[in-house]
Length: 117
Image (cartoon, rainbow, N blue to C red; front, side, top):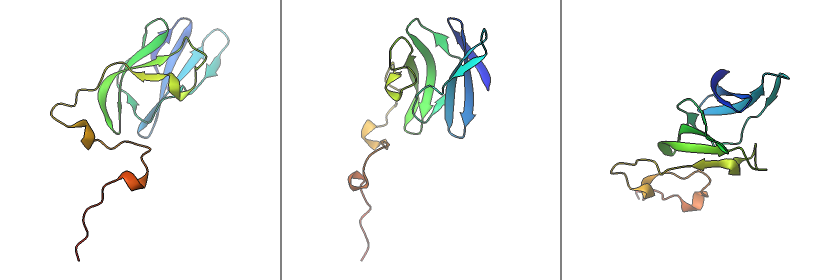
């Protein structure tokens, strides 16, 4: 685990798991560890900044170019995936967002190439 930031009295630790970064909170006073924080598959690409009720960091995922993301810490949703937010839309350049693959889509929504007969 790598130290990537502080939140109040807690240390923010990052652990790489393949294409995923897990964020954990460690309390140096009582040596407790909480996590991983609920976040989608992807990587934390920067240090983590304490922004009051949220942790802010650069995030990129399999279908998301690097963007500013946040994990809401001041809510009862802590340690849940719905506490994760993209704070700004990713810069897609000239790419049409419709061309991105969206995880969780059913197979029936994926376009198949025409078959040759």
